[in-house]
Length: 117
Image: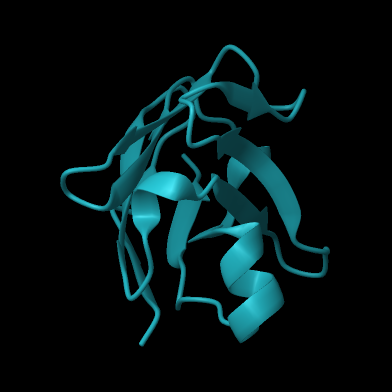
């Protein structure tokens, strides 16, 4: 049974930092590219960052230089370090894998990030 459990969200002031975690189970984590997405109220879900099984990474232009995605295959966990947070980063953040989405149509519950003074 595939499961993705996101955590680490919260309320932070502009300029602050948060570290999100996503614990994965039910599939072979180490061979899958893993993504972080976010969805703000009234907006479509957008891809924020990707880390491939090789370890290479890609970022949306809006977060490049501020966010860092990483993974620990021994813990089946993917992370998103978010620095210099802006109000426009406010959203529910989800992790996933294209393979999980295509095969299982599954999304976790996400974790809320609110950037506000």
